[in-house]
Amino acid sequence: MDTLRGLLARERRGEGIVLNDATTDREYDARRLLTNAWKTGNFLHHCGVRSGHTVAVAGRTPEALLGFLGAVSLGAITRFEPSTTTDARAVIAPTDEIDGFELPPGGTKIAYGDPPDDAHVEYFERDVWSENPTLVPATIDPTDPVLDTDGARVTHAEMLTAAESAIESVAMQESETIAVRAPLSRPGTVAAGIVAPLLADAIITLPNGDTVADVAITSDDAPEPRLLDPADCF
Image (cartoon, rainbow, N blue to C red; front, side, top):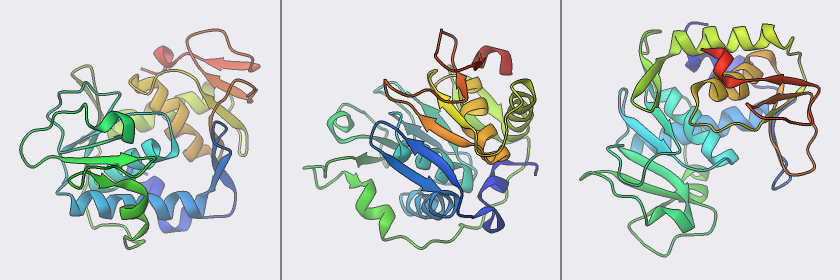
């Protein structure tokens, strides 16, 4: 695997749980996650997102992670926790936050959660559900950027290297739970908390106040027995 698009390959679909949102009691097995990631990529493509475009993503939810994976499938660049004024081609955010974003002409606002009142705002749950469950054709180079954070861009190759290092540093194992506690705006959080679990067939865990996982991705104290600071990934 030389780009993150390889994480979305059809043969990686399976029945094991790979994402648990403890805040809403939602679980995704690999089949459901990848199928919805493909659909999200198709939807973003229909919104005009292409390779090299930026997709701004707000929130820490399954929809936010699907936005990232959908952007990955197209060769687009994700910016987590964006400012409200952004040059992104599309922004994915909770419905109660979406009106606060300003996009350039041609940009698309995509709300998730409650249905938006504004007819000019797309509705993630409705529109992704209706898309084709197939990967959009795309040519992606390992040196292409996949993440934009604080003006610095991280390539597919750099992200995979960091994820593999994270797996080794905490001895991440299949089916272990990985609590994503650090901000997604930090590239190390994405590498260790999203990409690494997908590579290792572990479980991305969006924690609530009662969560005690096997590993925590955090710079602070946490109840997990093994901790990994995102700063150590890059």
